[in-house]
Image 1 (cartoon, rainbow, N blue to C red):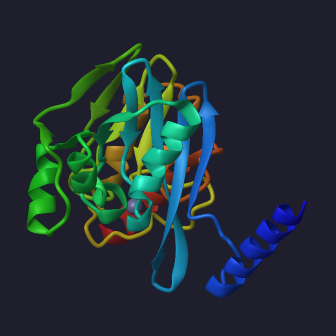
Image 2: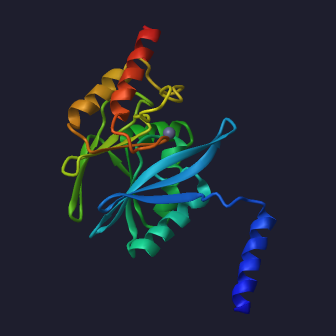
Image 3: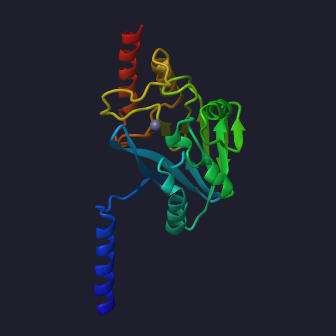
Length: 244
Ligand SMILES: [Zn+2]
């Protein structure tokens, strides 16, 4: 009993020393079946922004979609996955060149994880001094990992010139990355590297490619609303009119 009290006191004082309210730096929640969403955070223009990624458990290792944005969470993420599921991450695919997707690529490569981006993403990462993957895809690619199959699809320019999405046609899941914004988003976010005229067409290609999705995973908003893609198309339409 005494040890327990001491331990509690110790944890309590540690919290005080670091002066934190113990906001979790890494959140993991199950999406459906073997699909999990993980979230890390970073400060952008003075506010705390969440960045969602995903991982998929297969009987041939775990596939990570994008890397944590928070550089302190690369190892905690793979440790948490190991602890929770007793499986190791074997593959990591980043969906465009920005840091919130690619920051952990070189770290994971050093851990023996096979890292992938498209050739175009690699060109832009090189040009912008971002972390780069080991393996490059020159065209839309179907991955077969364990019992799962999914497709990398490049719909055209939008959030960036290289943004790809991942389509799980059997499970009807769109992993949209930063291309798709949440159903409540007020705008399409940072467009400094984007294509304001093509954005709408690009999103419509996603809609055509991925009929009747059950889940649409977005980077910086709640993913529990299936209207995110439709809403993003509306925003992109306005954007196009404004810039034409
Ligand atoms: Zn982003």
